[in-house]
Length: 252
Ligand code: DGL
Image (cartoon, helix red, strand yellow):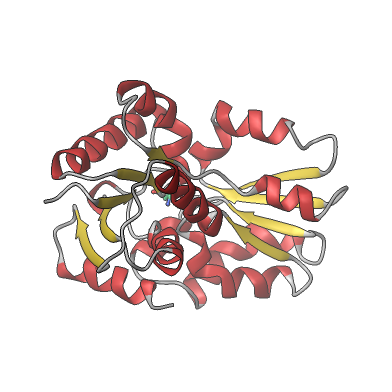
């Protein structure tokens, strides 16, 4: 494979919410999307395990040849991006983190929820991020174990999703200015999340910001492509269903 691909990696199908923003912003690029659904979810594993899986996926994608790696997974970014960059100082490696800054900028003094996986919310990286904004707003951590698993099964709305989300979100109904979707799977369940929180809560995610950051880095290195665009989707589960699910989610 030629090295002008942008590799995009997630624990499973969630990174497609970042991929769609990348394609929207840079349609002429060639993308290789790799979802590690065989090992998903990452968000309830130990940090060491997430780090090991992230390194394995990154080494695989580097071996395929790529000009940049987008870690389209908040959990893998929280657990491993620093180590990954230290191990590959010459590589362009972009991560994603919960869009708390965007929320704090839009709602100074506001009530802001951050829904993410247990790993993301317990990592030091998130605490450091959160403490930059706790003077200017109130931040509520909302771990959502189980939600990424449902989305991996193709469930993005309906009874199972609502049953999982209701106990997590009903205490916040009508009370949040913004909810940051700090896991790349969660934007696919946005309709149910919005219903439970009410129309006055803004839902924010880091997909578009990550795409802009990727473009800036490629531009700075003179590595933007002028086409034609291409997309290859691979999944460690090795099943046709996961590829079809990615394609379906990409169209939403
Ligand atoms: N999509 C991942 C994230 O952004 C996590 C899902 C999982 O638990 O594997 O955090």
